[in-house]
Amino acid sequence: MTDWPAIVGRHKSAVWQTAYRLLGNRADASDCFQETFLSALDLSGRQRVRNWSALLMRVCTCRAMDELRRRHRRADRRDDVADFSAVASPNPGPGERVLAAELSERLRLALAALPGRQAEVFCMRCLNDLSYRQIASQLGIKTSAVGVLLHRARWRLRELLSPTVATEDVEVKP
Amino acid sequence: MSDRQNVSPEASEAIVDRAADALRRETVPDGPPAEVLSAVVAAGANAHQPAKPTFRERIFTMNRIVKTAAAVILVGGIAAVLIWPFDGKSPAGIAFGDVKRQIQEARAMSFTIHMNMPGTGKAMTIKSHYTPDYMRQEMVEMGVVTVLDFSKGKSVTLRLKEKVATIVDLGNMSDIKARMEKEGDFLTQIRKMLEGENKDLGEKEIDGQLAKGYQVTKNGYVMDLWVDPETAHPIRMEMDSPMRKGEGIILTDFVLNPKLDEKLFSLEIPDDYDIKRVKMDLGDTSEEDLVAGLRFIATKVNDGKFPKLQGVDPEFIQKLQKADLSPEEKQQFRNTGVRMTLFVARTSAESQDWKYFGAGVELGAKDTPIAWWRLKGADNYRVLYGDLRIEDVAPEDLPEEPTTAPKDSPEQPAAAE
Image (cartoon, helix red, strand yellow):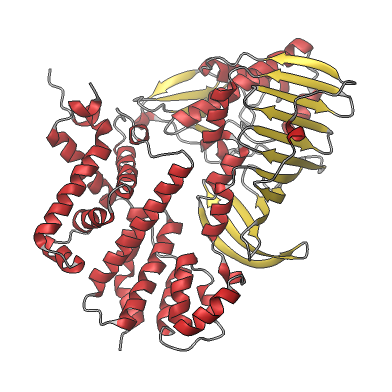
């Protein structure tokens, strides 16, 4: 029989961290945390779960992406569309923490604009450090397909994140 | 040539890694909250058992989607299908998201503001109507009605007892309206406030009506929001923040997307009113307007101290009435005050880190920072001190942020928004 409290205890930190990182605030992360465990619990009543960690991380990522997309749509409705060039300063100065926070927020906005699978693969690979094989196994696709999805995700993210890159990253030589 | 065309593939590739790295390294606070964790554990304990009387309590804190899923898990599919359509209006049927969506998506809103004038304890009631094109406020006890027509760039204020109408030509109103919509007006502030963290306050009766409560916290503000548990329609908002310290503002009588008579927003003035016209120069504002406005208020109105910068402050209005300004000074106050407000609205919208902590600080306090901001794209902050000099300051050299407001002069965190 499933030892539910033990499963929650073992994975709560990882799920919380993933939810919070992707959503950036406690309220949404709390909702995502609950939805993740309850969805997984629901699934466990219908089929045997072999890898709780993988399942929870995948569900959490999907739920968080759903919320990011809702956030993005709400912003669209308010004519307050994500303006990536306005989010960050072209020359933000030495405040590394400020720059990092801006980059994080821009990435959240950009992820919301990606097709679901691409965003999911990107998060699994780049945020959760899963291998291509692990991702393929979890998504039920071939390893090569993971590579393609990841490549497309990175390409699109480059487009979305790059408007301010010019002055940040181009090395100016005397 | 666009910026993007200047970016090398390597640099553009690096930004993706840097962004992912930044997100991975972001500090995550301790969590999840204890109540969330216990709800999740409890759901597991009851997952495959028949429904129990405490079911509603357990799903109470869940959001809308999870409630549906949880109902299926906890009650069993058939029971949920039977109960849900008929029990859908139960107090557990709404979530904060429903409340937030209703308010945020409303194009127009009417409500009544109740507040007490600090110091006098006198009640003040302001009936308000906000639409995308107009705003109307009726200050009931004072007998003052103001209508603002954004498209015409004009406002009319009627003082009912004195039968005096003041027409204000605000010039380029579309620019002001855009800024107000983005950052400034009261309705926008409420909508933004709802993005804060929320917690469940349970239920209570308000004026004979059952209400469900949420406490929303954002940037130091706390707002209690009470809604109809069946429809999520707002019933009452109570705002009590460091800004008002026990002098809370209460909003009631909400109507979302009201059908309002056009006459309410008419700029026509009754025949028997004396008319005063005020024309304001609202061209490009600058730091000088902030300095001029603060200096005028501190020296002429506010006993040598800097004022609060946002919100309706009856205490300040009283001081203004007692200040015995000459007609020229009144005109000067209008101009400098409005230009200062516009500068603040623009700067706070265009800055990464606008903060004002001058309320109650004495004019001339040369070592006390009273505001700072850093415009997007700027390396340094502009720091305004109590002697009204402005200096360029590198981020690492910013003075310490005042943590406590001077006595009797509560701080204004809203200005930091």
